[in-house]
Length: 473
Image (cartoon, rainbow, N blue to C red; front, side):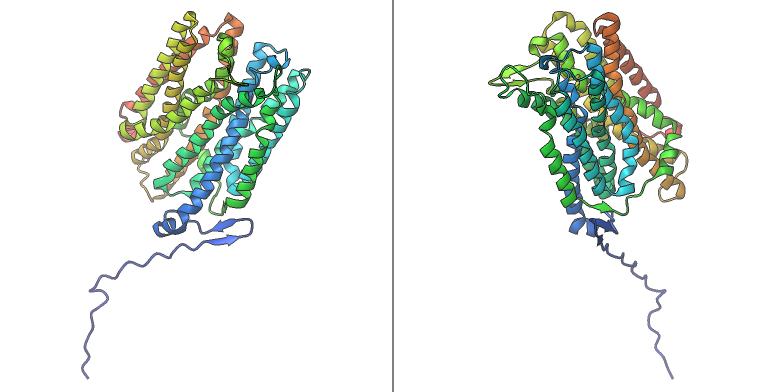
């Protein structure tokens, strides 16, 4: 019996096994199992639309968080007109305490998404905004309210500062690596704009139809419908991902990395300056140029203080884009140099008592802080990529995966530490005013700090180093 042999399976290369398609499983409470945005077919078919829907409501909730966080920056300049008798130092504390609380809350908020779910925590964190919004409407209605009570309500506004960390942590799980930068950039910019919107809208709302008085309680009440809308939108349209896991070990490892602390210092200089100057800008205008604190437009009062936060927020994406092209370290050096020049220009031009020159110098300073925000944040993954190559932690290996986890954790931790600048900047200005009767000494201190941070960036990140495998940071 003769047999005819067919082609051996070893002679012809077998096609690679087909990857199993992503199949989502939905559970009650809008929980999703099996989420994998790196699967191209799934991402194109349904993943992107789900992720963008969650991103949209996340931006809205974070935007409101920034508004509540920075609301006291504009309220303090209205308190004297509403009958409150407070010292300048007390006003500085009302401005800076929300930033201190918000920066501290960013640490636990980072992990809440993994513990209770992104959708669930968005609802909870938005609901927490109702507390300071309602209490603001109550306490500012009575000029006899003790300063301690005002300080407590201002501190409660810090819950809005924590929203940034949980919102960023939630969105990073939804998008593939190639689109994370775009999504997180939109999320961050949308939140930062909340400061500008609050400083623009509140003076208009509290003065329209108020006559000789101020409806200052509306500064809190006006945001309640929007907060309720954010809660409803998160409940109705957002999702929880079971794949979102807390990385406590990655955070602990990142805290032992010296570059985390160097970058945290640089981020205090950029983002800390942005949020600190944004919160104190309305008071600085009222102190230096009281006649320009607000402009009357019909029955409404408009403050130009919102321009600072607006310019800084819009400049942030461009800082990231320039960092992609020229390297984050080089752009950060440029940002610190312009920040130092902007602060020096303020010192040199303050004796002129020209409001428009003052405003122009500050807008340059805000633009530089915004560019620096984008460039310093872009440096972080580059630094850890360089560390991975220098230490042999190749992608896909256990050491490489560990380094990726450290990098991801560092992004959240650095954003939290950097927010403490929002407390430091107003307090430096407060000390300067108490000690010298003006702000010139504080701005000299800022110039020295920016120059020091610029030199640090050059020495550690611009000059190629073996410890970073010669990477362009």
